[in-house]
Image (cartoon, rainbow, N blue to C red; front, top):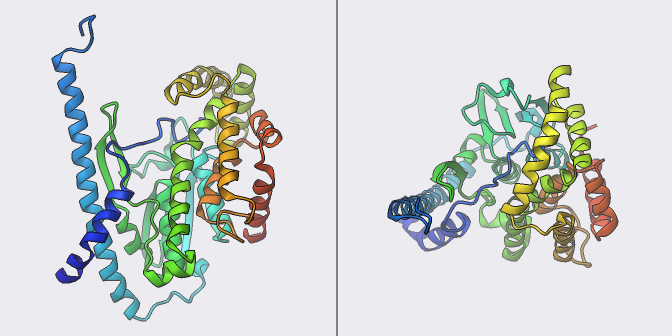
Length: 373
């Protein structure tokens, strides 16, 4: 085993550093509910604190690279043993897994997961979480949605983070490895972000745990795999940050958005009325701060239009989806993020003023064709 791990070191090290991201962990500053010194400058103490935070961030990244390497090597070694044993992979997935998704319906991260589950015809139950009390997820120390509980035989696994959920389940579908083994390849890691706040990130979350034959069968080449990972991350790091500034762009749009949120969410009558009017007002002003934080244009619609047309250009004219003849994980991620705006003015404007509608309707049709009835 030691020799095998050493043999994986050069490739594994490069993979771990590539997948763990940039020198400081980048986390969405938007809530995952989606809609829902001296005058002359900083003194030595402030500079020292800032340097300390950067040092901590870099140390966490270095640790993440080492952990990623360890799990990459461990996966290669253990996968060989698992595939040498008789497996129940031929059984219907619906007979092996019972899935429960804890979500906010209007959360773009939750919508991504639903798009994946529906496209792969995976039956699942939905628990709508009250965004104020969140009593439905009191069992979890991880307090964001989506959370997916997966029962496989007597084993109950909790999967956190939308991209980890998708990568782990796709690895499971393709490789047939037990889910409790697969999720160990996406370890949570604590780090300090640029604001000095401790955050949880998941290394390798855009990477599928497949051997070379499985990867070749699924992607056909390294370029397709790299392209899918790049655009999945783009959906998380950029596209999702355009949703709130656009759906809360004006007071009227903010009120319409919260009317939709209350209608689709799990609110009581009084709580819903409070959420609609107080929440709409709050998010209108918060959206202005988000616009400044992400350096968006004065008219945030322009950023949304540019992002949509950039995606359409990346897909190109020679294939219906980025995945070719069928949507891949990047297609489903982008579709899932944009879908939460359906029924709102921002969505209608997006369809009218960009070239994304034909692709969007193709993905919608592909998911409808596969989704359980």
